Length: 143
Image (cartoon, rainbow, N blue to C red; front, top):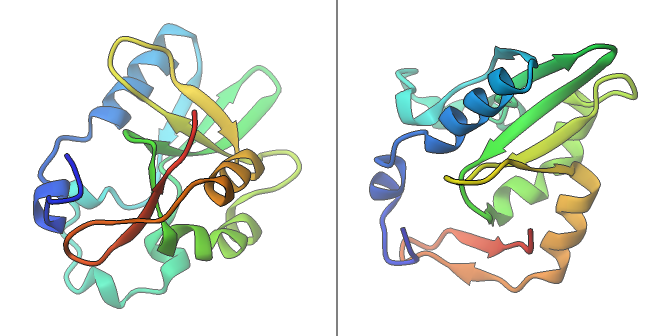
């Protein structure tokens, strides 16, 4: 996938990141619960009309021993500007001291890169804007 792919083409790729995350969680004895919308399989009519906080429900709740995390899984280091502009709302809605919001960047052949939302925000701010040909602005963050 590159900046010439349309939204439909970008969505046609399987949810490999989520599959890799689930495999990793199972191998490491985490208990996870899938939550939120999974856009590549989303059958909600007029999804775009929903409030942005609702559309961006995190992907998983992850537990192990006395630790709980709310997880957004990414299969790429590309983060949309639109998502980062709503990050404060997502943190207020989904993160807590006892269950912080984290990001899991998942790629074939390696363990997930787990990052606090604050680190994602910092790295996003250090990156340069790029644009897919359909006008969606994103940045590729350093992992």
